Image 1: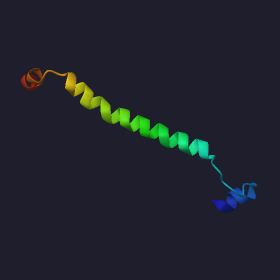
Image 2 (image 1 turned 90 degrees about the vertical axis):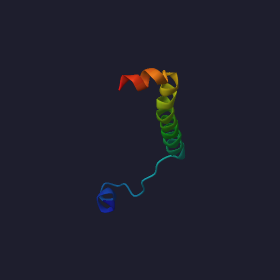
Image 3 (image 1 turned 90 degrees about the horizontal axis):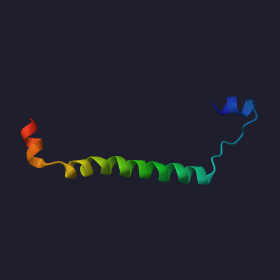
Length: 54
């Protein structure tokens, strides 16, 4: 892979630090929201109605 990139004139693969930080922070936010939604939804549910449903 490095040889192919070098043949095309790409000697260094650099990703800006700002992009890396944005991806990590964005992933963390999405993960927290995805983990928080099911418990919130369950807290709004009537427990007796949920048990009676099955």
